[in-house]
Image 1: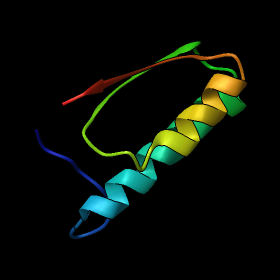
Image 2: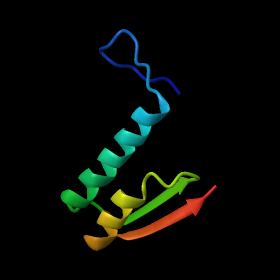
Image 3: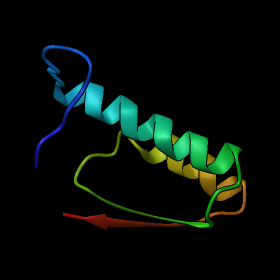
Image 4: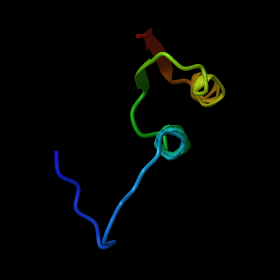
Length: 65
């Protein structure tokens, strides 16, 4: 997979990816786009944002890997 950006170099670290994913999940439930979230993760950092999505009426599924 190749990612192209206007920046010369895009250097994403693990925590940045986690923050971006949490941001995207928040955006989904705040704008009422979709109704189901399926996350494959072995990490529990996403529990608060997934609980918030569930409270907003989304179906939430976590597949622990």
